[in-house]
Length: 145
Image (tube, rainbow, N blue to C red; front, side):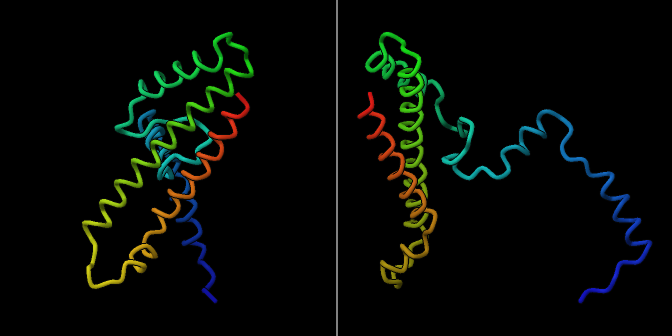
């Protein structure tokens, strides 16, 4: 069991805690908001990762709107909007999985059995599960449309 803190230690902890208020500038707050982002596949808000083309998403969304919601019925527009985002996330999964697979190939130890390499890649397995879930959602949305 750890020893109880002294009065001096408790006071020092209070002083140090009072100095730490987190980021203050808009840039610092924006950077801090991205601290836990790994792939953005489970994010509640839509964010584009560095290197992604927001224009590509918008073009696909507009094409899907023309195809599935030409009359701009609000419920269909919402469904098509989510469909476009799911397609975008599916593409993100493909890009991330490809990049991760390239890293695995670069680091591949040819003395290790192939099955062991797959066991060493939980990230690739997680991306595959996300991609499968996105495909299921896409198919369901297309049935609704």
